[in-house]
Length: 384
Image 1: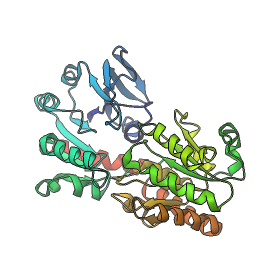
Image 2 (image 1 turned 60 degrees about the horizontal axis):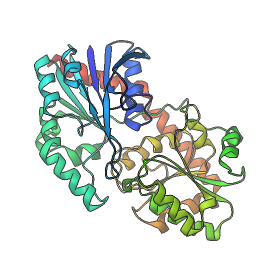
Image 3 (image 1 turned 120 degrees about the vertical axis):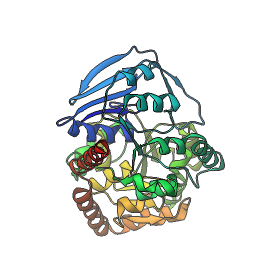
């Protein structure tokens, strides 16, 4: 097959969707012709073409709209229509329903190829009125029309599809869960990360709580920070390490100062990919405090690393974890606190649950298996 992949960003951009696309298509590129069309990594860069693991990556000149109300910079890509028109693909794979509009659909339809849409996120819910209502209105105005135009739809969880796709279109949907590189993300002795811990000023004896996600309301870190502040009053050396970027960074730093835990919290970003696994290995527990989460790559990386997980029972999280961890209610500071305490007080249980999580990732979330599922769905769609 000739496959044209459309996503606003691509590796080495450090996003969850970008990680998914790289893992899927570096495998499919061994058997198919894969072209990715994405935005330049920085504003003002000229059009470029490069080969990444056998994938032909076209980056187009782009300007970015970066405002606090958006979870990430919005790309305005130049020459997208022309770039799509030059591809004579069998299938065009769209991975973001928020940046591709009518012109993109028309180009794909004129090409004679089929259109696939993967839902990496869902219509937001239970986050805040602005986000929830804004997401719903957007999908009513355009998101659902894109779904209607698609020949096939995949979603990263059953919940994502049920939340986002109208009932009359469920028949063209397929659930394909994300995978995880369990060779890279694996259990290691804590001393393997001592150099990074020293750089961050974290003692080797600290109980490290890890969170990895954009610094936005949806991820619920505000409740995790408050839970750590409560724990800090009762426990010894506990440290919160948050990995991510976003508009709430300064807010979280001010919170930590006001709560008296500035010395117990780190916010890290720009971490080299080869170092990322060690941030899990240095950690005693991973906490996802999200208010809504269609699917979580970071939870899967924690599970693959053998780290016990405390997570809010929202969206597609139960489908990913399957009980390999502790569930808490969204916005429950006390629930997060109790979940962390359970692992502090019972290290044997923490190790047992961590290993159960890793076994699940190896069994059901191998990237080779995930890539083959996409390949099978696309081949079936092209033949119709």
